[in-house]
Length: 71
Image 1 (cartoon, rainbow, N blue to C red):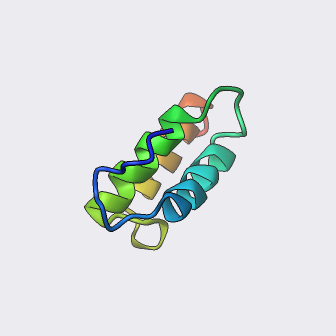
Image 2 (tube, helix red, strand yellow; image 1 turned 90 degrees about the vertical axis):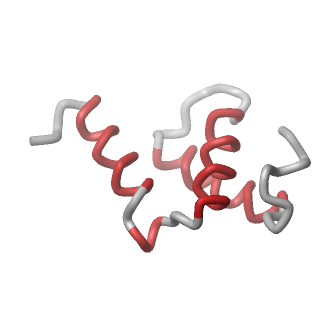
């Protein structure tokens, strides 16, 4: 993982925690975690988080759509 986040105010620990949450939300797929790490940086740097909806809402809706459970 890149240890120099796009936003210098984000620590690797904060990014790792959010990336882990994103990975868990995706069903813990195999891989190196790069996708979740980059998504976490983008989400945190933009100020969007799970409590505000935004990206989290979009991601959950996308997952439901892919799984065929979205109306």
